[in-house]
Image (cartoon, rainbow, N blue to C red; front, top):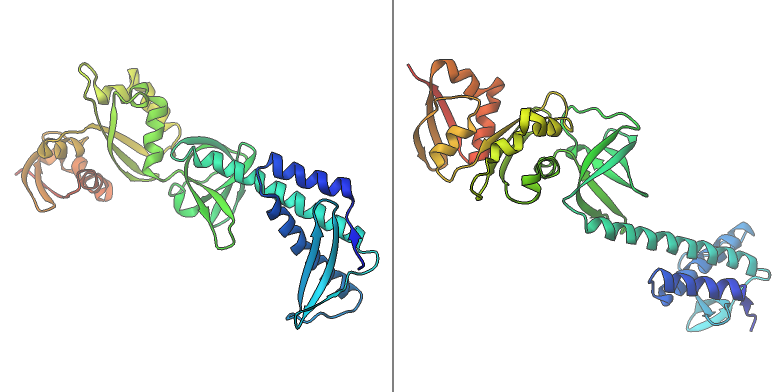
Length: 327
């Protein structure tokens, strides 16, 4: 039997290293090397003008302890050794490529695992590439993506710019490729900004109850506190507005943020949600619908530009709100 040999020390040491250090099943490495050897054999034959029918079946006998191997063509339950003379050098290169690939895959799996544990938190990223469908963002020692539908509407980020992103999800396609998905549009992004800039939100003494957002335009945040002596709205605004300004500093300049007090009393909550309008009077609340009245000089504020304020207030309260002016 014409048995070829991979360099023993390189082969054995590489398999042992990747299996031990990267926590990968050694058999998985050997199986991948066998597949790689068959592919390398087919390429080698093609370069020598030999056309191999696609239906042909090949097997590799690989002795892990020594790195010895043979390639067989399987026909009618018979195996014919077809290992080419001088194939050892090609095989060694193939084995090294497969092992390097396994190391890369293992490292990526470790990175993905690290970010899976950080889902729902913020991370600082650098914009590396821009295309119409997504941004490629450098985070730590790896890359992540921010799809178009996770980007803030009308926000234009420049190459090399640094921004905060929400680690939203880990996606996997049909080939098994995994991507870290980032977002700046998700409501959780706003919540985490407040947790970052407002200690009372970070330590849970102030709770972000609900968020309604039209990214890049306006956001309403309803907050509460069960601890006596803590003003949830004042905590989020900060002395002279320092905390809310820090939040706004991470958003496009056109996006406004209203912080309002959450209330279990739906009438009070509706009135709060229609801020900055004052003197809101709730007339009717039933079956997902509310009708309110405001003084004429407050009507434009209650409705907002293009109906934005009343629309977001409705999302915040889970109601369709109709506003009319007091005659």
